[in-house]
Image 1 (cartoon, rainbow, N blue to C red):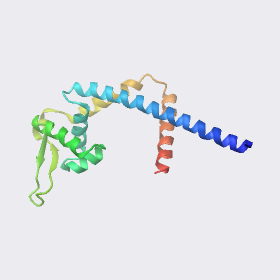
Image 2: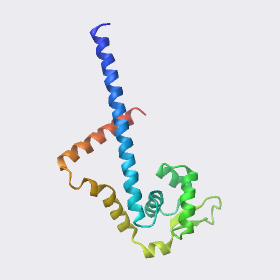
Image 3: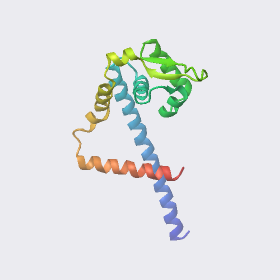
Image 4: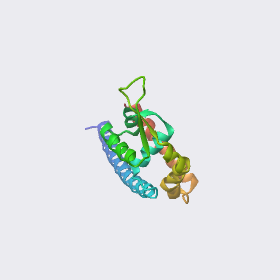
Length: 160
């Protein structure tokens, strides 16, 4: 084996080790985000996926179940179950347009909108969720993290 082959093999090994470490860090972050989002959602009497549906429907009223599931990166059956529970609680309404009876549009119920400030809910949820965790961090270190995540995102998107 020559030096070039040794170097190439070492680079592949290092890249694999770093990839494994990145994956492990993302698993830990995902677990933390899941825990924090569930904790924040409970303040409003919902689960994290239910809050996600509420926030999506607030931003995109009259969306179809298919589109909502695509936006949330969840299966249609998962979103359908969440919507069913929210509809029973009076949070979500289903509307069948007169011009196309094959689709169902989902929206936040007027009653829920009247009794809840969804923008404030979202702001507080996000504050609990991320802002509270990073508020005491060094801003320069956070900028480095954000830059690194952007760069990783670019690298991952290049290899689609």
